[in-house]
Amino acid sequence: DHKDQTDIAVKPRAKTQRPPLYKVLLLNDDFTPMEFVVHVLERLFNMTHAQAIEIMLTVHRKGIAVVGVFSHEIAETKVAQVMELARRQQHPLQCTMEKE
Ligand code: TYC
Image (cartoon, rainbow, N blue to C red):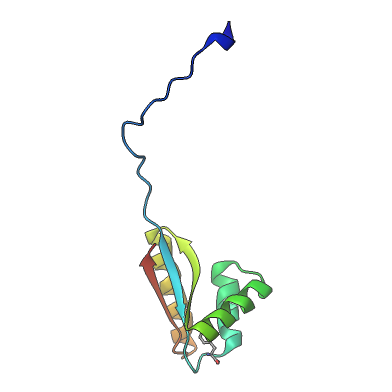
């Protein structure tokens, strides 16, 4: 019957490939207004107002923080969107990405 089945450990033939993930990092500076950073985090990283304030303050205090982890293509798009919003408002805000 079905309970007679013996479990057999099977070694996987090869490890499953997963696409690499990239951290999107926000950098502190002395000039970008705190409210602008909070706005960017809410609009581009789908954070609540409270989450956005928390992450903004972490960047402000520590100099840098991870604001999200994405595929290479999405991370590149997020970085470009942050840089474009900052450029349009003439803020020196910097955003970059790095392989996890
Ligand atoms: N340090 C800025 C200020 O005091 C605020 C700030 C926070 C700037 C986070 C950039 O990524 C940043 N106005």
